[in-house]
Length: 434
Image (cartoon, rainbow, N blue to C red; front, top):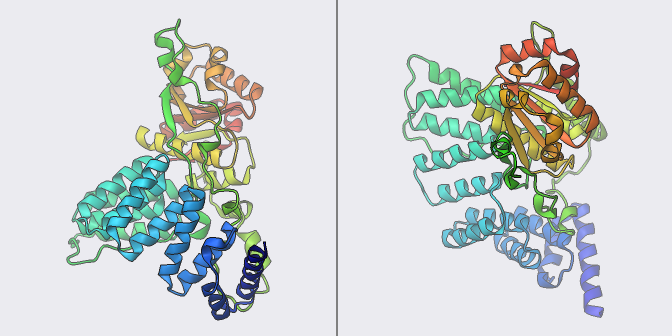
């Protein structure tokens, strides 16, 4: 009991030293501490960060192994794997990556780690491009989209580079990475453009802080509601959203959740530190996000703005996807479903997809058991009949917090459709111009 109390006391002393920015003294105390005997995972994460800042990677790695062996969490394994890749031990990294894939479903991090591992092993740019193209199908982010565009340019794939830059602008609207993508597009469109020669593979751009959205969810399944009508006497199991499971959004273990953020050495806090936190809140960011108003007076936003509104929980989440190919619409729908899960709106991990023509021939009220607790994505939505539109409005009124409606279609047709049905337009709180 005495030894355990002494370790707890020393951990408290080290935390105090770190809070006072006395890092050298903290390191000296940490070196005398048997890390295996530290009970708090929070303290272990803190000590690992201090060792990493001091370039003591041997101790950083040791602590991450202790955390992983104790918690068996995917979060801890992720941190450990990234460190091992950075240290260049490829055999160990491959073993850890295999364990990471076995431990959970495919997420954005899976592709990021696969890319980092392939790059560290010296794989050619063509292999890295292949990984990022797969990443884009699962979860599109601006920093990895821009990385893909730069690799296209280095490989002389001019048209693909230009299209990728256009996709970045289409999806994310504005921001530092969008600006860089537009500059790259302009460069590739120049008449005297030539593919770069002898350039090193660039490091991925860091996203703007307020643009960072992280996920720890398995892939969102998209099923088609019309399959249910093929055999009316049968109840196809694949269309029913699975019951809520705690593993849907895996989080760090209980002690890990309170792990401190990376430490920044600051002697003084600026006088307006509190104002900065307020300014970067989702609500404040929304005020800065421009809206696109169509000729018919319909207000549209970017995907980024919609996600910020989801995080701020300002309105009931129903979505319009105006324009864009079906593959892009499905990818955006998946991303939004993950964000809804992330903020705890509901527990469904699937999207039920149906065309407007099929939906017009169904009695929507009879489908609520399949739709409740999930997302209904209607393709070619401007083809919905007046009765179906009225049924959708009634369903939304009667099933608040139980269903998310997503309507997709060509921009001009969708814009006209929303002007014809203003009551529906008002309920669709997030109108994303693709």
